Length: 257
Image (cartoon, rainbow, N blue to C red; front, side, top):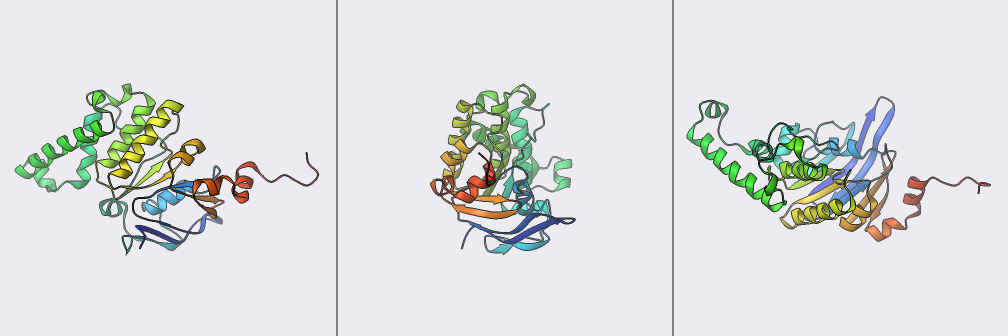
């Protein structure tokens, strides 16, 4: 049984099928890349998996349970967490404060307990601070723990958003263009960071346009175009797939040079 199973996933917006009959599996411990041209439906797939959108039809099964009709917070509590194309951070807070705040999805104290700062709430807060420090250290961000997010370089902000995802102890982490805007050196560092997260037992799906990064990090790749899957396989197989090349470069018309 795969960790995640997607079957006949379809999403219509009016008469447009943004995702159309999509099938794929994600085994536990894999790094899967979901790629395709602009407008192919990649972010919509992420929104469906995390229940930000509800499918027109199809099912999403996680750890053997149908997640299709659960709410966003329920899906997150089950262990599916995502990042976004744009950094989703509190810019006037420090790095450490951002990661501590992300831990509150796992909070065990009640709302009243937090209001009165109960013993359980104080224990949660101490555990969250310790865990946040460990995550920042693991991702190489500990020198910036007390730095306001607005002062961090772009690459560090992207890494910090991954740290927020890690704070929820995900089983499946969805990374939406994690290498966007990075120079080659920053990208190489981020690739090693993502591989390290996988080594900690987290399965990863990523959407990314940087093909050098995709080919260097992925165990397997699913390619979609106009919401449909057109190819699936290992990086070397995808590199030479004619349908993928056509989708990205366009088909040459007869008679053209």
